[in-house]
Length: 111
Image 1 (tube, rainbow, N blue to C red):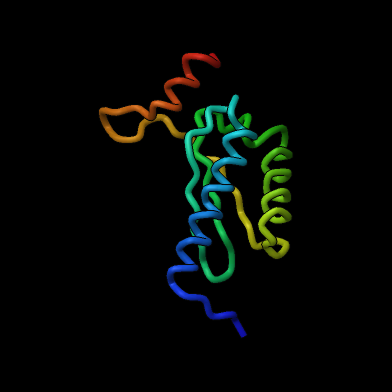
Image 2 (cartoon, rainbow, N blue to C red; image 1 turned 180 degrees about the horizontal axis):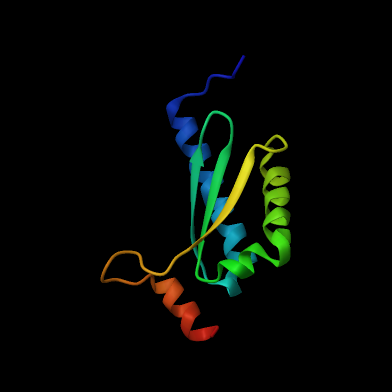
């Protein structure tokens, strides 16, 4: 049986999780044009979508780096084995006319 927690505690714990995950990925993927993360929770798994300008660097050779990131996130946040899926997504434009400041900065400093 699942443990019942209040909505307030749930929002706080979700916010802390996203902040810690964002901080970890910012440090780990700084040179790869990391510009954000999206988290989608389903009943069977948690999908973490990494937004970056250099997705090939995030994936690594033969997907090695993304598997390492998945293992670290599972261990750090206590997810069961196989319940986390991390995907790298190319991020160029935020909207039609505006650019993500962070991805533009990385594009200028890390050609």
